[in-house]
Image 1 (cartoon, one colour):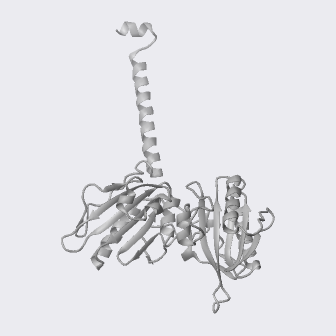
Image 2 (cartoon, rainbow, N blue to C red):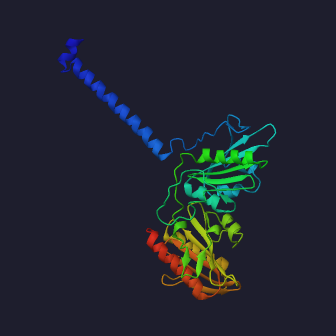
Image 3 (cartoon, rainbow, N blue to C red):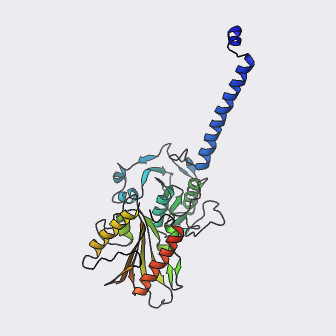
Amino acid sequence: MVDNINKKGFDISSIMKLSLKITFVVLTITMTMVICGGASGKMNAGKLDLPKTVGVWNRPDSPRLINSKNIFKYMNGAGELYLGYRFRHLEVFDYTSADQGNILVELYFMESSDDAFGLLSLDWGGEPVSLDSAPAAISNQSFTASTRALYGGGLLRLWSDYIYARIMAERETPASKEAVLALGQAIAAGAQYSPEPALVKILPLAIDAVWKLRVDRLSFFRSYLVLNSIYYLSHENILDLDLSAEAASAPYQYIPGSGDPKRSQFLLLQYENTERGRQALNHFHDAYLPELKKEITADSPSLFKLEDGWMAYKLIGRHIAIAFESPDPESARAILQKNESNLLKKGGDHEK
């Protein structure tokens, strides 16, 4: 056999060197996969291990699994809410105790961190709690650095990367609160500290020193059903929202007039491209302002006097900006112009 190898130009030393090279390559590839998977956190994107026991509460080995097909059997009426945020699946854990009531844990696995943020943004009520070691400073404008988790009445809601979680104690006691917060820490542990959606960070916090953004009313969404729960426009989808779109909404409050409070509801929408945005704005005008002349221009906002105040809209590339219930045309125009300025600075790809 040695003679045959030598005739082909090989020897034992060459074979050993080749074997070592192959082993080294395999180990390198394996280590790279492990390192990359650990850095991205996506290797186990569909799995989150919670403690079997917390305080006097214990959970079963496996959760109940809920998907888009059976979510309406699990919850009455609220299924559309989660499906409107690119819902993947839900894992439900029931922590039981002998005499302290139960603790329900719901882990909503979403398509992206933006979707999980959106679910939390629908209600900023509760006491902000810290569950992880958040960075001391976050680049760019950040609205919710201290409010990624909110607790009140035995219920903890939190946003942790692509997971939105609800942890609810059947009976609120000091012990159950401690257990609920411990479970929240377990969920947040090691998760990527994701920023707010880029669209949300476009909204200016103040306009002309007289209008202040109500951050506690700020919402991110994709569905017109969610929009209607925030600011009702129509029972139909008159803005052509779907899972490919993004939207942010919040009221601006007039600062000087504290004795006579004024506000304007602002809505910023982003579509896949400019044509989709133009079609959506045309649809919106025809449905919402059927008796008023359509004025969609690239230079200035379109202004309309309605029963509840002044409304203005503008198509900005693939974005639509709308201000509702402004006290005067100057206010509506200022709100749109400042948001457009921020969009042009931060949006980058608005001309798609």
